[in-house]
Length: 234
Image (cartoon, rainbow, N blue to C red; front, top):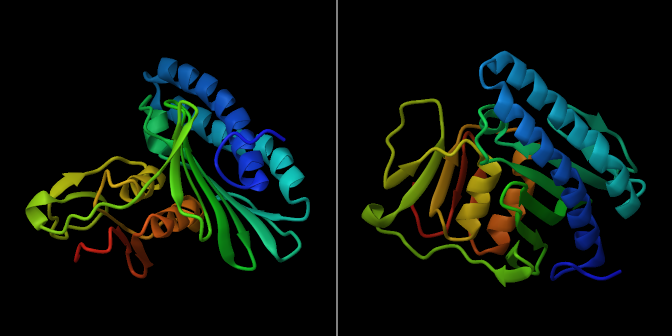
């Protein structure tokens, strides 16, 4: 097998599965842009698209680990109890409104530890990925580059994404992007210094968790989810 990106054969097989699924999502995105006069119709369409992601990618993923289970926000399938794929469409609310800021989040967990993580933006075809203890990378236009978190700590210099419903104090240059998976990837890549969120479905953050850590950042999932470059105090 010819490797597309720097990393293991399993990582590359997962990326190829993402690419095949993403081609269908790009067609769906073109369709949903024509449904903007009916948000209800657009939401129904996007939910069906999310369901198709699960169906279309499952067969490809089972070629990687045939006995693996599957966890998505809507589906949980038992496997061998050791391996599990964790999959989510992040930023679905953006997709509904014809906003291209959404991503597929995919992780492979073995024995309750995330080993491979990918966050793929189908519209700009940019991939953020990591393997345990091998660092974090971004892939675009047939080139992989290692990513690291930022080193900023002064409140006046920070750019922080929030996904919260309460009226907590916010610091820095505030962002609300609507796509938690890409927010985590951007913390890993130094585009954001931190991300603060209400609790999220684990399927949406499993990949971002590993990517942030492999890029040198920190992430805590307690009452809130807080991902930082390790220098920001929130």
